[in-house]
View 1 (cartoon, one colour):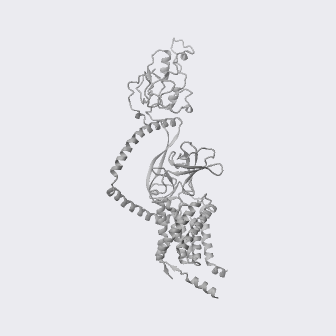
View 2 (cartoon, one colour):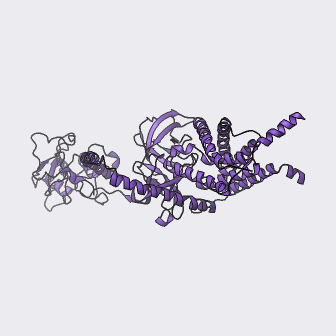
Length: 175
Length: 436
């Protein structure tokens, strides 16, 4: 009984946040817009995936798999529209990431910078793996990934996520 | 069933969303559409994102221009001096290159090459990109309203950037050459090996389909081959950075793009490419066919039969001047003219390096007449020394013979051999040979 109580209490302690509709709408668009602008001018910075970081942040903060799924799906589809891929490649990748991130957010404490870094690190690699799988398996495109770039990208995105999450924490509203 | 759905509502939602997207993806892949067809979601997204990016870029440019053009002029004087020096150097170099180009044009004309020329370009500014390193796509601020179409080549001052893949009313999507799904016909400048340039996962480019037994050295330049019918031949793509034996039959050749694709601001869209036959310069020193005719032994034309003259076989041959010292004047005529030429003047026999040192004989000189007159001894042939650097010559009367120092002409730019008098009017500058 005591074990169950501890478990129940610890789950309750994980707070569920909500955001103003304007924030939900503007922040992902801003992330996609910045990503597009930065890539156009400074191609080497495209290794940073701001839409992915934003997807993880909203999914984890709201701790609802369905809303995480929807967030990832919309962000991914908009990102697809800016690429030359068929529409749906990033949509599928980010839907899965949103779903997984919110599922994890409902189980563990993700307010710690270390866990935020680790989570983004892993999700970045999973995201790229899913992308590769879809592009090669469904689109039949000859796409490859470089392991060095994958690791560098995972580390960089992890660091950016820690900083960006701290900024976006200011927009959180308690339910 | 309802209980199961309620209990696993999240999982069901995931499956439904993924299935919907997968079906949508499959639909796009299976249905082939024309190149101008752009999906509505792309139009909407670009319609929202592009104006914001344009506004940001143009505002930044506006303030940047004010700063750089009116306030920050510290190093302009120094830069002006440096550019002036460079301009002088380039002018000199241009004269030399024009000479080389003239030679190349004559040879190409001889071989009936068709050449592509970039005849119209449209400058455009880069306003954004795909935002993904796995999709090397950029957006430019010109679209269908300015006449852009898919498959137009995009270049900048340093080299090839990519090609237009989708066109919107005021913007266009450009696929860079280092994207993994792009492909561009390429040729190595020195070894003339051809391959297809594609993007590598690292953001570099690689030249594929060059056989493993070929020799390719790092540092060699890679140019467009023109085989893809998008990029005109001869544009700079990049430089070979490393060559390794790859898997299978082909080499693994890494290429560093000539254009800095990571920092693009302005580009040029090639809106018109002209294809035309290469023509030799109208006032060039001499055509390669003429030179060949001059250097190779030939059979002189038969003299017209004169009444009373006992034209015996072999007379002409006997009277022919020695091939090594005196040759009949070769008529200067267009390469396409139907005038019979010696059988030995086939293009394949042209020796490179023997061209720029020969004399010009203007149109109107008659080979046959000169040869015949020389052969029959009716006119005493005048002799003109073959002086290097002689661009144009005065009109010579029929029967004039050019004497070339045997066995080969001296190198370009060297003085005339001692004891030989240059022609009196041979003082025009070599720049006259510059093609128009």
